[in-house]
Amino acid sequence: MTPLLAAAFSEGLVFYPLALLTLIGAFAMILARNPVYAAMSLVLAFFGLAGIYVLLAAELLAALQIIVYAGAIMVLFLFVVMLLNLGETEARKQKVTAGAVIGGAVALVGWMALYTVFERLPNQDMPTALPEGFGGVAAVGKLIFTEFVLPFEATSILLLVAIVGAVVVAKARI
Amino acid sequence: MGSVPLAHYLALAAALFSIGLAAVLIRRNALVLFMGVELMLNAGNLTFLAFSRNLGLMSGHAIAFFVIAVAAAEAAIGLAIIIAVFRTRETLNVDEVDALKY
Image 1 (cartoon, rainbow over the protein chains, first blue to last red):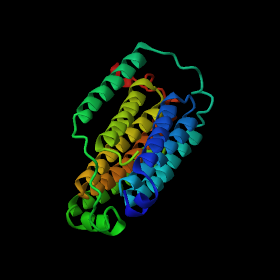
Image 2: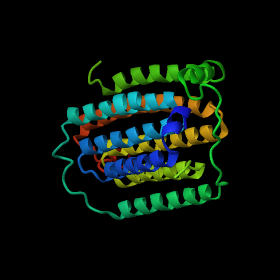
Image 3: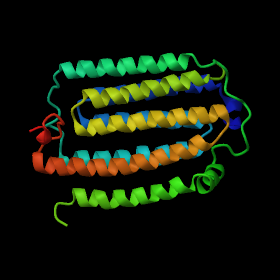
């Protein structure tokens, strides 16, 4: 945790409510019938995750989480929902099929397997001392532009391709 | 409640990943399916950041940054495909989009 937060809060007192909020948002996303409600629940989960990122001393990533995920990506989802005017067609009752039951069971087994692995980790506390400026814009930016400069350039090409591709795919007549 | 051990962060990430996986496997609405994928990417990010914090290294932050960029590109392309599919088939149910099967 950042020194400022550590002075005021106990880490667990912040983490567990935020984790609960995130899980509620995620469950509401999967249970919602209307895609708009699913999107709004996912925004709730993203905000909870942003709080947890702050707790992990990742201030830049927390800000990006809110700006890019809760802001841009979810707005894009809502635009598509409203563009396609899905409200009534998708609201009809969903049947519980065998595929859904098997899918839920697979997900549950997957969580159990991951949990068993993580449970065996040494149950030690996180280090209290962190390098100066850990997770801030300057430190992460320096890392991205030195050590990770090749992935950064590849990402810029990926985004360019994504822009062109999205226009080509979605536009009816070019 | 003092500090939180690494395992709790990882357990939360595992739970979020499983919920995202369940969304992809259970829901048949293509939009909700994509939201499940976004949730799984976020769970991966949480794991990167938790290990970053635990080891005191910032490489995880850089990788999480790239994951967010890739997720943005994926959402743009995916939603464009959804619009294109909806325009021709008038449905978002992935079970009904099965032209490749025949």
